[in-house]
Length: 361
Image (cartoon, rainbow, N blue to C red; front, side, top):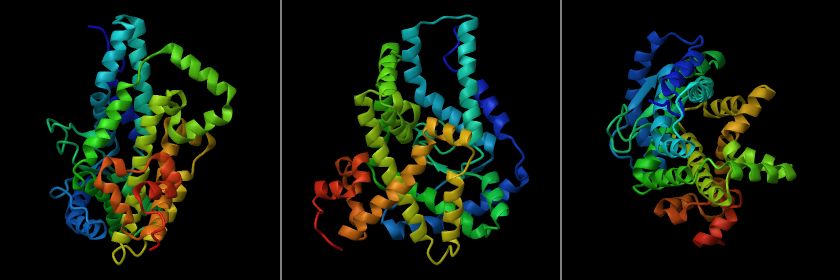
């Protein structure tokens, strides 16, 4: 049988090897699991009080180590990319032999190394794409599970002297805000999945298209840098149609990340006195790193992820200042009310479009 384009088993093994660097003892994770699951009802009630978003049922929390986080994400990539890779393999042909095997292993090493590196930096993750939308597999079914990477939480607490009870609740508030967004707004999850599937459907291995994009970007290096900053290598070679979809995803994710950060601080008021310090340390940590690390972050799109937090928070602050503290709730009425990436950067354009211009809070 011809090898696939990615050796998924090797990707998981490489990722686990990279991830399995010295970390707090795994013997601490069961106690952390019990603590975080016990805190979840309080955190959910605080999020609902701030946002009025009611999640669908109690949250399931999974405290995992780094290799387990890698395994969950490898499985998600395998499931998500399966239709795309099948189309690509049909197009390039099934070519068994040393070259095909080598190609699949190189792809596996790249993916595994990337996920292994990221596993040391992630604190929590609520991601619809981690589970099967049909609920046939995955720890929570339908992706409805909040992952917390226990060793990373504990190591940060010890490194910076964070009060564990406050820091853990604070992180939980952010991830449960994302869960409230996706399960409390019925149309949001299918809309998000639809955009991701649309972006993948449009991705085709067209060497002529890649060469044309490369020539165009060589002529305009400022544009090339802007695209990489906004979406990594994928944005660098995307067609105008693909960029339009990526911009929709970028606008939506900026809103959700900014809303998550704003909510975690407001929901934690009175419960997390050290929230400002946590935010300052994590912001500096997100932006830190050697020049090679920053370059990798930019190329794979993590830099755009960091920008989403900041741009989303600025968007919400502007909207609230002009139109009131709950004006952003208009976004939950339907997909046509979500801001585009350009509107995230220029909130007045979104206010104009939804009819809130001139309404001063």
